[in-house]
Image (cartoon, rainbow, N blue to C red; front, side, top):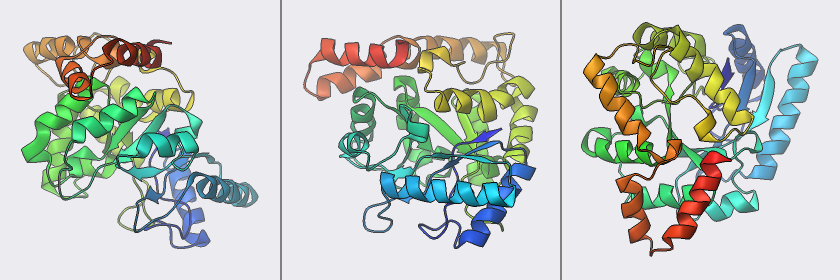
Length: 304
């Protein structure tokens, strides 16, 4: 398996407090079946002032220690970057690292309050040539009142990452409900641990995968924890990656036939699979025109 979200680097955010904890987290991840681990510390202005070069150096240092300790885990660079208006510029400068230097990156919205102009902020990242992966939407306090906005982002090409622990009830009944609902609606691209230590929030990707398999089947569960994460690390364009929620028969693992047909129609219209959604065109108008150039850039991003 591949885990694209974990706070394992020691002493730089609210994850591993020291090197010993980081090494133990790595052991637990490897024992759980993870072969490749993205190191994704917070980048949060005013609290965690991490940057690309610092994260890269810390990742290389931890990899060296794991190799010395005989822990069979490959580390790649990343970040859990807080959503901000200047994200495209910071990505371009290397201040915010993408996942394994790909076009994909983790983006964390504010947890307690829905940010204004949410669609526009993600739109700017997409148009800059990147694929934002929205982290743990099921755990956001405002998901109930703003779920249509989450759906719009999904349809416009934003990827969704659910936390494995949410499917296990580790964050309570509400995140469990939203995690299961998003899975059943075919709106989850990636499952990841978002592990922060060796206690309550320890690496447990296999358990989350098994919970997803009970809902969607083993094939889609594998896509959540291996196929799509591997495509991210290999920097494959999204239109070459299997869409969420379908098994090999072209139907949802746990949905009715009517729901399956509705889901297929919804995703066939999305930017992520080569179309132009109404929500995208509305965003385009609100961002001052330039329709042809914007569409050309998105087509290049998603269909190279």
